[in-house]
Length: 286
Image (tube, rainbow, N blue to C red):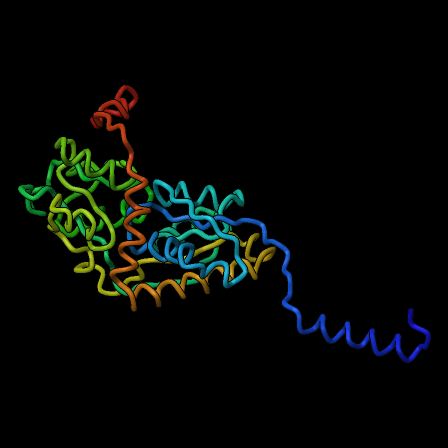
């Protein structure tokens, strides 16, 4: 027992000092989701995968989960309802979504130039031979859709009449449709690196030739999340920029980590393209 007030004060002071030197125990942060417009695009998905695998999100106090989508419009819906904190997508999405009235704002950007390319099969047609043929994109209204229309116009063609632009989703679906010759070509980011490296496609058009100044990738969030969870948004962006730095310094390790995740998203069942749509209600041009 303590018999004197002085002994009590000494002990109290010692406890306070010990507590100040002890490691702080932080409460667990609620899980947040970081979404990408597509899965198999190294420039979009890579930084999120690396930030999660290397612990950069945790370093920034963010309990983050990676959630890929099948296109920019699908990602937007998830951001708007609060399912996803930050969306990583093509730069055109922010302009068209805000124009449509969606209360979102770009919070960061990474990557210089336009990394989209139009690819075909190794024995496929040249860009000038695509007139009258089908070109695959992720979704109508997405960055890939807009850039394909721009590329078609650059050939002097009408994108509504001279080609068919089909929204097919992710890289797996695009490659399957190309293999079955249901499309003649498709557009993809990261300079088509994944499919070209596999020997499954060849580049026939670089979109950067018609967009000398371009922002390839952006990160955005809803205005509501920016207001309510600024620290989570800030921490997530910092973690991804840590990942960018790591990817530049360690390209081989980064590719190995990322490729395992990209391959895990491949669909197993491939259906003929004509099973995905009907022309029963398509207006006839007179």
